[in-house]
Amino acid sequence: MSNDVAYPVLRTRDAALALSTARRLLAVGDRRHARVCVDAELPTAEDVLRVRSALPDVWFRTENAEEWARFPSDPTGLLSGLPARSLPTDQAGWAGLLPLWASMLDQAVGSVEDAFVDLVGPRVGEIRWHSLAWPGAEEPALAWEGTHAMVTLLLNTRTRELDERADEHTVLVHVRRGNLDGYEERQASWLASRAGLSVIGPAQRP
Image (cartoon, rainbow, N blue to C red; front, side, top):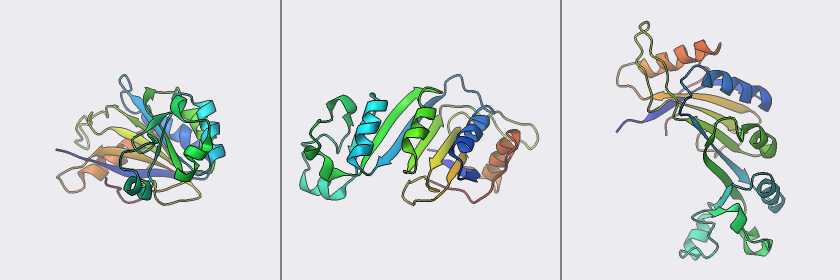
């Protein structure tokens, strides 16, 4: 089974620039079947309520390992994921599980990205566009790629794991992990160049 590898092509403190750059990179690929997923860490109850109001189709979850140990039966529903409409209005039932994570999966491209960037603000988040197809090229002998063609915008973090805060945003281009020396970086560099960008750092692997 193959895996992807992601290369950074932009780092900036300007969230609007990061989003527009990610969209420019998207335009390099075939977007007919593309979808977008978003994910963000919400450290306060006010953050949670604001996101629930703005994005009523969002799902909330906790990644609090202590809660997994204490409540394996998941009485709150937040260990496995809870739709916004089911989140109790009484904060006492979930405030102890903060931070919560807010996610939306497989949305139409262009439907949530702008609002999501505004809502995330200084918090850690991710926008990931998937189900793209990267074009092939005879020179430098790069194959068409549809399985691992993705673009990710990391908000206020540099890592795909979203576990390391930063004061900037990072755009990643994803390609198939290659068996040939340098193939994956050549493909990432070629795709980046089609959007007027270049690879600016080492690969990030899942």
